[in-house]
Length: 112
Image (cartoon, rainbow, N blue to C red):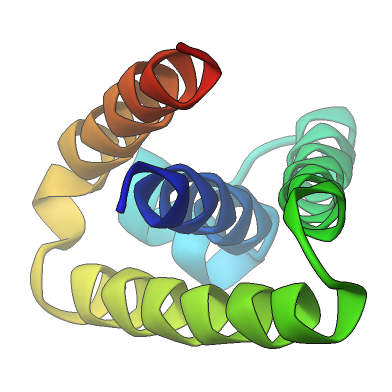
């Protein structure tokens, strides 16, 4: 369960970062568009976090099973991000912070 929370939180953070790199969502999250360098940073950070979650999955078990596991958590994370951007746009920063805390705590517990 902790491993799922770790992968889900990382994929959610990656998808939130990718959403923050899109101008429409920048207006929702930050109330203004970001400059080009910050947009590029958000995009790169989002992809790096998603790839990190995939690498963690690949090292945790059989490759074919863990790719399916990652895609399942990616689907659930996409649902959470989409619903958050649609209905809770004023609380995106809080939701992202909660995902980061969940990722840190579940990562520590998985290491123990």
